[in-house]
Image 1 (tube, rainbow, N blue to C red):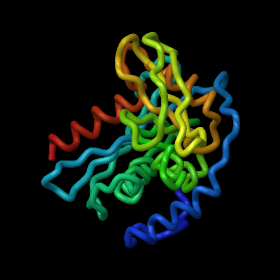
Image 2 (image 1 turned 45 degrees about the horizontal axis):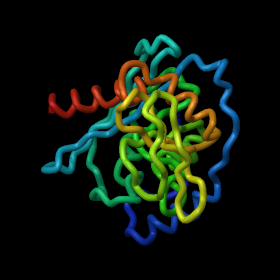
Image 3 (image 1 turned 90 degrees about the horizontal axis):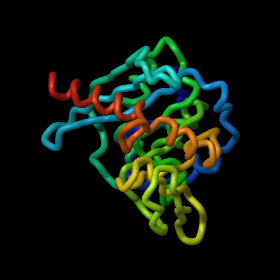
Image 4 (image 1 turned 90 degrees about the vertical axis):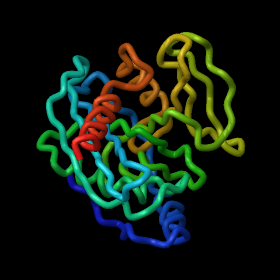
Length: 225
């Protein structure tokens, strides 16, 4: 998978925010052909608080068996500190390197982070989707911003998630009586399809299997190094 070069990565914070505002206008939604899905990828990044080095992984799984068929990884410097709202400028370059190692293209990428659920409408899932021109879904473990009610206690229960009165995603229970996840459109998917896909990818755990596999891989890489 190859990304377009739309901007540099080594930027001042204000310049990075301006790029987010510009790219957010390019986000588009379209139905995902769920009945045709055969390969799904999950991506994640891990780093130590005491080190500027990060590790990224892209794990491709067969769907619906969730058998791992390919893994891409990358190690490198994280050029920006962790700043809420600017996560993609810290992690996306490594994720793109990991994705570039793949020989088989997944039909959709699940990202451990937000999509349009972002103060400027461009979280890491949407940013990656635009650069790759590829369907992406944001599936975050915690809320960056916005308001929502409490979903029901059972798997599949969900409530709308909004920010300043504008819909930005859904808060979805993926396992009975376990904390929900925060799902948002990344790029070239609809929220309805994103919710459906995440629920299908959550087997016995709170998080989707492709993201869990990527998380295990980055932790393994970090421990080995």
